[in-house]
Length: 76
Image (cartoon, rainbow, N blue to C red; front, top):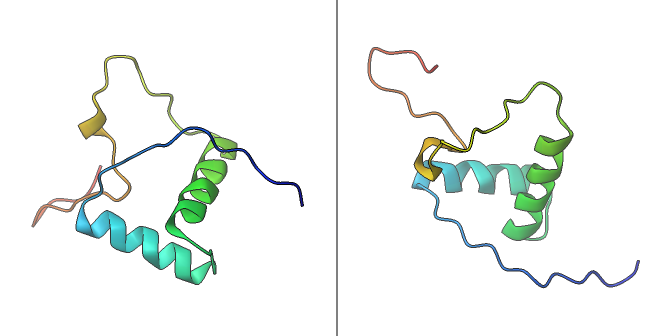
């Protein structure tokens, strides 16, 4: 396999439950690193059908990996 050139660095902040979900996926899928797991999830997400397109007005904090549940309320 040829060497991949990755010239851009992307830094993200994750909540503990998001990091746990990422690590669970990584180990279940036997990914070599968190970065590889994130790339795989991005690839799967971009290939999915029917996912909503983010509007330009949405803020970064409105996006998350896992939905947080409030006691007594169902996630949207």
